[in-house]
Structure formats: C-alpha cells, structure tokens
Length: 492
Image 1 (cartoon, rainbow, N blue to C red):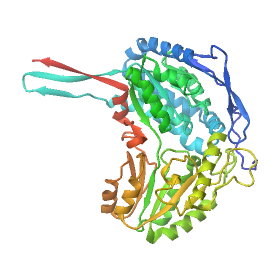
Image 2: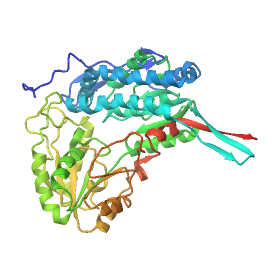
Image 3: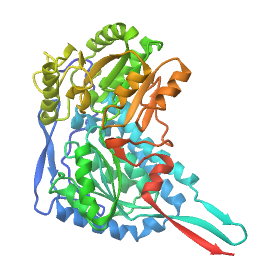
Image 4: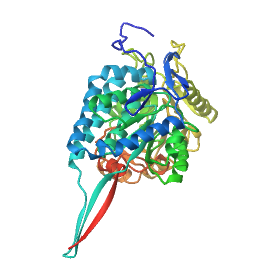
C-alpha cells in the first residue's frame, strides 16, 4: 500500500548475506544458499549463505584463536571503549539498520527506528559502562586466611537469536559476552539475517579484533544450529526462542556439559482489577497485545478482567483495536505490519479457527485485511467466551491474538494466571497498593509489571520460570553467565 505518507528507507536496499568468519565475509564452502523473503510483499530480498558443520568449525576455530589473542588480554577500559563504539556506530547507521530490520521482519519502520535499533545500541553502551563497576567477593576467615574471587571469561560462546527482535536481542547477548572477555559465534535466525550480517562489519569498524565476532547463517536441526550446540570447543550457549527448540539444544549440549542460558516462550497473563484506570489500562494493553504484530515473548496474550469492569473493558478495548491500521511497514500510518513468514501466518490462522471450534467468539479481527492482497498480514484479533482448558488460552500463539476472560476474586485469578507451564512475565493493574504486592508475590513468573508493561532497567534480572527459561540475563546476571569464578584462599 503506497500513500503520500510512505517513508522512504533512505536508499537502503536489501542485501545478500554471507558468513562473517575471522574478520572476512565468506560464502559457504559448498556455495549453498537459501532465499530471504520479504513477509510484507512475499518478494525475494536476497540470497543467504547456508552454513553447516564446516562453517561452524571454521568460526569456532577463529574464535578460539582470537580468545587467546589480544581480546582476552586487553585492559578492560580499552575493551569498554570498543564496545561503546559499536553502539555509537549502530546509532550512526540507524536509518539503514531500521530499514533492513523492517524489510526482514515485516514490522513497521517507526518501530524499528524508535525501539529496535536505539535499544540495540544502548545494550552496548550499557554493558560498556556496567563492566567498570564489576567487583568480586572477598571473605576473611579471622586471622587464619583470606578468600577472594577472580572472574575469568569462559572462552567461545555460541549465541542463537530469534527473528522477532533480531538485532535488539542479539546485541543483548553479544554485548555482555564481549564485555566479559569472551569471543562469540552467532547463529542468526534464518528468517531475519540482514542486520546480524551488518553487525560483523560494525564490530570490525569499531576495532574488534578479527575472530572475536563470527556469524554463521543457516538452519537449526542437522545444520549450523545443531553443529554449534554440539561443538566441544563451545563453552556455553545463550539462546532466545521457542521452548521446543530449547529442549533440543539442551539435549545436544548435554554431551559436552555446556553452560546454558535460555529465554523461551510465554503465555503471559495481564490481570486487570476494577479499581484501575481503565483508559490507561487500555492504552498500554493495546501495546502489550499487538505491538510487533504480537510477536513478542512478553506480550500479554491472556487478559483477565475483574467482572465489574469486564463489559466496559471489552467494549473500549475492541473499539480501540478496530482503529489500528495494518499495512505496509514503510507507511507511517501503519500500526502493525506483517507476520514473519507464510508458515507462521498459517499457524496463527489455525489457532483462530481452533478458537471458534472451542466456542470462542471473535470480537474483532481474525482475518486478512481486505485491502492487502499480498503479504502475511492479519488483523489484530480479540477472542472471548473461552476458558483455561482451551488450547488458545494454554498454548503460545505468538501473533496478534488475545483472549479476554472475566474473574471474580484474587484467589481465582492467581490460580488461572499460574495455570500454565510457562512463566515468563505478567502485568497487574490496580490502584490498591497492598493488592499489587499481594498478587505480584503469588504469580509464578520471572518478570512482573504493576501498572505498566515492558518498562526495563537493564540492571535487573530478565528471564523466565518453568518452561519459559533457564537462568537470568541483565546486569550482574549476564556477567555471572558469561564468566567463571575462581576462589583463591590465602593462609595468613
């Protein structure tokens, strides 16, 4: 859809994607490639080198050489300057990177420009500054002995990142891994390879030595992904993605006892009490339901509303949702773009049909917008008349689909919120301070927001409980994962 409001991506064109190994862009040894598809137009964006075991071996070998080279030995202040410079260059190239991100993901350009790319830069700025504040423990055993700890980098780290926030979530891992003195091998999501490819060039431009950052494109099972998780010289795997993939990585990594950090799926509750400010709730709930086409692991896809406010909430929320414009990612009026792929689009549509079979009522959405003939576009969808036994309430859909369910008591909604094998995040809306603390303390999730959503302090622990993750990221928690502690005991 072309309008006068269409944003020109500043001459940025899609790129073919090669591997970045030992400071050089290289094709696959067998010259094999796959196509990168624009989800908004269904057109080919370019070719992507398809890597496998050979390319992973080359990348790990390069990372191993670089680990014992200048990067590990570099003074932390010098390393911090380089890491900060990576963030600076990302901001200098913001328009280019934002356009590539929107081509790849189908998300609106305003979203890539205002959130994804600036936050990717901030990840480097944050960890460059944070590493200067790091300390370790020391314990004195009276006048007998003194214990103190040394923090050491692990070595070669494998980073596997998702397609929904490609550069943002990749830099969330790369920045602390580098700050801790490690080298990395990155396996980007096959659906979104472009900004990861550019990151290799940016790191080199910032002064990162060759071999410290390596990027191998490809697929997961029996390909680059499995080769990375199984490699004996890779000391740890940090993965963000779908829960079943995390289980497969855990099985593969167990053979070499790799350290693992997971941020996995979610089916997050949004709990709304009748005493909350309904207009504020709806304004934020629109974002927490449908931003990035609902393809955010933290989205509140189960909306529980206290019965006294239920009818008013549904009426206002449906009306607000109907105002959302779905369309061309480069059109400034578009609030939602396209889903990531035909495969995922079909999967989300299947859940909507399943909701109907389970007795659900589609209050709005559930279909392709009439004015869009191509692309994987879907209207924001609201479902009512479902319960905790329905699959659309229990399973992660990862699209612009939410279910609204009434509740009567605190005890009831806590039980419903916890009735899931996920435990990533939750939002609670109430003006009763005691209730806020009381309910928040009972929700089984790694991240809980009260009267807000997606408000992040990067020093705080980030991660999920139950099948939503293993471990925590952020601030000291990231450094704990990406480094090893040695205790030294000195007898006095």
